[in-house]
Image 1 (cartoon, rainbow, N blue to C red):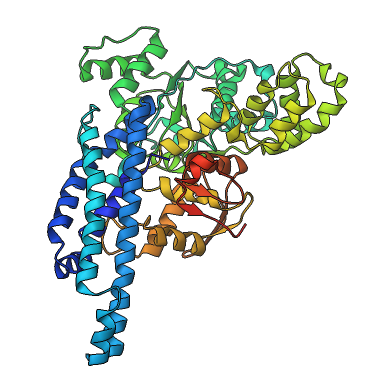
Image 2: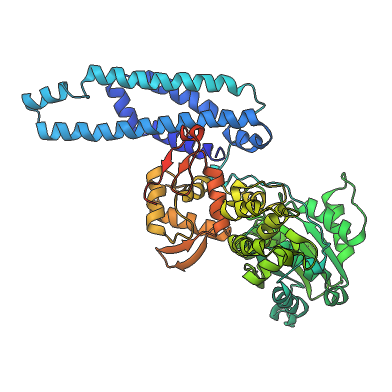
Length: 544
């Protein structure tokens, strides 16, 4: 779980710079050591965001971040320890009231000035030496300083999709397809209005990673009624970067089968786009759109692009697939279709298709079919999870293989690049750095746990994860906002939402994701770490 070292480092720097801690160091004569520690830490912190993004391709960089994170935690522990001892000192002084007896008690306590000066200075010096080594190792990597709003930092992973689909391979999405097509072929109230100024409306398909949003969009895109209704259809995978010029290039290429030159001006690409779309009723699919942040869609970006698309004929439509409800809001969707999981019967049909291949083959293995029901239930309606596990067992007929898949957490099983865990991890990778530790620590709770905001927000506050960017916002309010952001990204599922209280759950597969990204730091009854990871565990749940 290297991806939120920046968040931990930010908390540590705030602690080191705090007035209370500086007063302690000044009182005990270790200010020089403190300043050296802060300077070294500051020089390292400036490149952490770049390191977190590049570590996915560089093992040694990931290991370097791991060492830095451990030092960050040790500094944080030291700050907490000194804050506690400061309270002890105040209590001793208060009870002693300046008497000889009280002064003698302080002299023989751990707050003896000579003893404490030695211990504090030695502890800071030891941490600073470790940081010095890490600072020297930093030069081995081509890292650049990244500045800006740390709360908006997120990483997007490039993903490509296409519009082709074998309809007979898709199971259990007929009703969803029917609902989308009904809204697609009918004019909205805005479009029917005599004074309508917008020819284009947006339909968003939202849901968890792997739930089948892209597949549903493909089914709609290739339906014969849709093909007949629209003058032209275009498919563009947005993925990692909502860049208007790049998107215009791809829309023009999809509409005309001709690529724009890389060196063409923005104005020329705009004219080509408007020429291709003018007065034509079109369908545009923008697949895999991410929410606000450094690279994602924003209201300004979307309004600029929509103004260019509005030259199309009345009744033109845009289908957006996204994991984030905020994207649907930004793009002013006239319809938001929340895609749910498949029923168990459909999951079983899909699993049998992937695990056995030939029709009727499963009837030869009744002892495996009993296990198959348990595997299908484990997927909780997510088609990509069913496909991943079914494909994993294709051509395997030994009972122990199937039992292992049923009984193990998905994050422990082998995964290819297009399987369920990598697909879910895209949602984690795209989180702003301040949300990553908040999500990961949820792995301490058991599966199917009913979360209450009061308990979880208190835990986040105790760990220093709730950070105000405005300075005057209550930490409880910040925590509620964090929960709503994670819900918006389909990582939490809200059961009850009032102004100051939220009840929610985590999908079993999302819980597996939380365990997979926190395995080095969090341990509970749900996860038994190895002897090696035990050394790095920082959070333990002993309550079950």
